[in-house]
Length: 126
Image: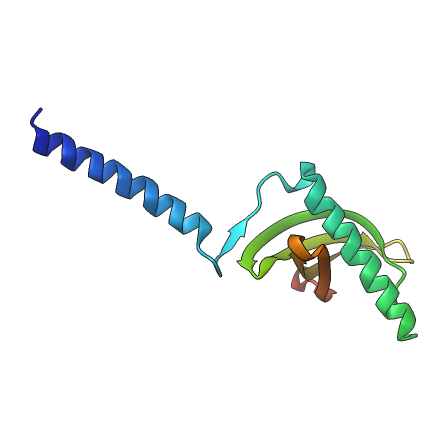
């Protein structure tokens, strides 16, 4: 092999590696989280989301707020000023029905904060 061929081959491999890295780490882009069911951090964020939703509903006295966390079934993350999570959460209503909810929350580790931005029934329930 000539030096030019080796250089071209090395450059091609580097570009392929870099493009894969950039596609998975672009700020603002959503990334699917794998192994959600065994990811303890994601499951804890799901539990937190249900607890926050319940607390908010109780303070608004809307009659809702009696969900029991079951598990996170799907999740995506997005790099923002921290990490924004999009979770599909399975929860049990007080009547015993199992429903899926969509939750959005932001975690800012260096501020030790997390905030539930949204929690609503998933369109899959309809």
